[in-house]
Image (cartoon, rainbow over all chains, first blue to last red; front, side, top):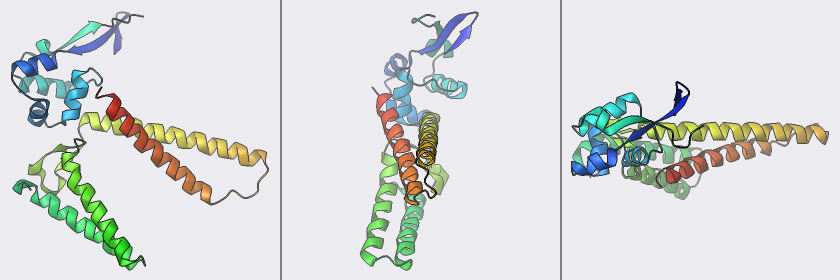
Length: 79
Length: 133
């Protein structure tokens, strides 16, 4: 979470939807990018913000455009 | 047992035997040494299946790696443990200063280390469970 032009932005993702579209399990996706299943769960539940490198690797492993999997959104909680 | 994981398992078996031998040769009874060695080997055998590490068989003896989420959890747990121990040290300093004790019990250091370890492992488990819900 960070502030851009006085708006609080958060990284959102559609990792679970895209993963299910590709018929991949969390463990399989984790194996493709070299992380644990727990990491995939934490990212899908937006409890953990992955690094740029990992986010790019996830999009690549899912063969999906980066913007389709991850995007920035104004924090719904507001400030 | 996966064939590619052999270097990992063999190296960990050697380490477990080493720990057991160290305990035995420093004066512990044989049964305690065997028990410790078996317990350590059990942990090493469980680790690849624990979900705590990403498994890279191609790395041989270093097949288990922390990924960035695991690293973030470990970092936060270490920070919590450090903060807890510092607070306890401060509290102990105030207490022993207030009662005017010239000597601080030696057992305090052990208690602080145990408290730090408990906070570290407690935080680690709590964050892992909380972030999976």
